[in-house]
Image 1 (cartoon, rainbow, N blue to C red):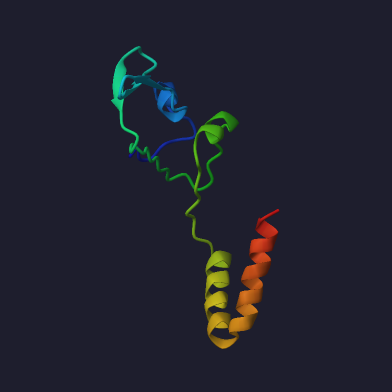
Image 2: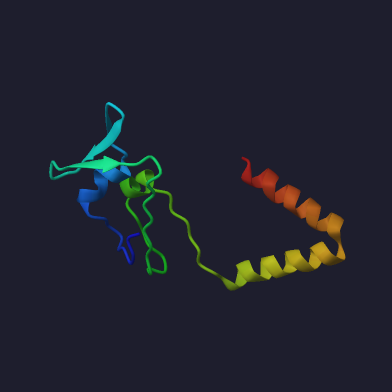
Length: 107
């Protein structure tokens, strides 16, 4: 876990982000930017968090990572509450709305 990252990451992390894994026998190894070899586990996961309200990451960094925005907005909360209310009051209407959302996002 790397906390409070800014809009750029240290280039030392590039081999990890790009998953430059080398297999030597049964072992998996990553060669870091400084030439050091480090054992790699297939179950390894790297998480980075940021406190930036609206970060603008470079296209290169965005291609190497998965960015998830956990920002809570008033509109998002209203949609969730409306969905819960409609689900309780008019179940069929909420099913139609969910089907439309899935249809639109599948394009």
